[in-house]
Length: 109
View 1 (cartoon, rainbow, N blue to C red):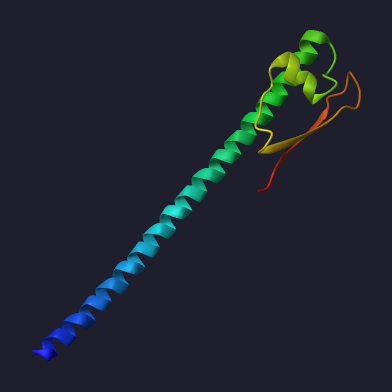
View 2 (cartoon, rainbow, N blue to C red):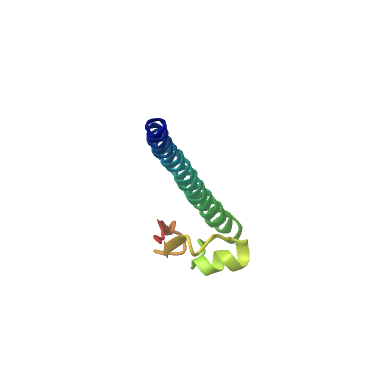
């Protein structure tokens, strides 16, 4: 009788290990999928911000005849909004009739 119980315990241990390995593999795949979606979302947000900046700068030049003097001017007068915790926008003005140099940097962390 003891012989059969010993074999049963060993078989149960193998099932536990197999279940744990399957769980870890599924959890890893799920985590990888979430990371992929997150990076895709950030990429689309960045593209959307680039388009919004281009449109706002061009519209301001069309309406007023000069490029906006600051990023704050675009926020106040043209309704530009973006997640400042996620992106840093470097806005460098060269002149009133020269297209500003705009750089978008994704913040880490």
